Length: 193
Image 1 (cartoon, rainbow, N blue to C red):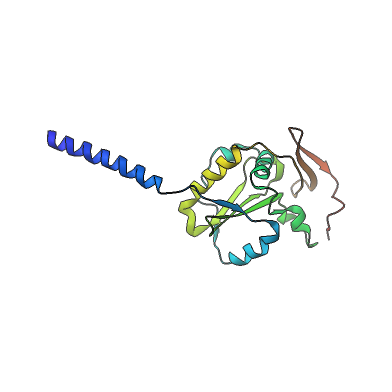
Image 2 (image 1 turned 120 degrees about the vertical axis):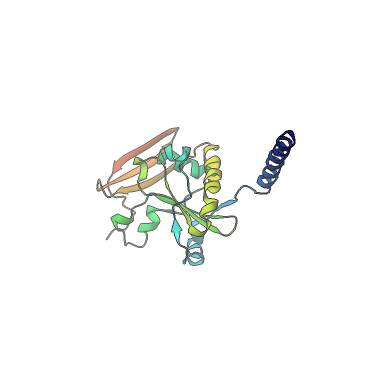
């Protein structure tokens, strides 16, 4: 009986040591933001990707107001890859395509990921999508993104959002330590058919 207990203890200690070694072999995911001028290449490279939101487990970032996440993303990664202004740039605006912003990323040099704000400044959290074949990596990717975004100070920004439900334009901002969303008329520099 004692011999079996010793073997079990030895096996348990060995498993703990091996699992620590195995975990040390994995590096933190490297998340590179795609700049607006490289969006076409990103879309071409990943045209055949099957996108999914699965694997991006709910965490503290999902409880943070989107308006604040945007300020923190701006600080960590710079300006979004796309904003509503980019979507409207071709003059073919459809209310159903109303976003406030999108950040596009490549993880570890080959895994596409997008972070989208579909509800503007009225909701908590964002929408996360990645390539379905990498679903098992997404929990760690989201943990890394969350850590990166929550460890930086928010950066000032000004953006626009159209709410199809309210049929209303908003100016959304973070300035002088205050988050704001104000109703506005359609921005004059936007082309709308």
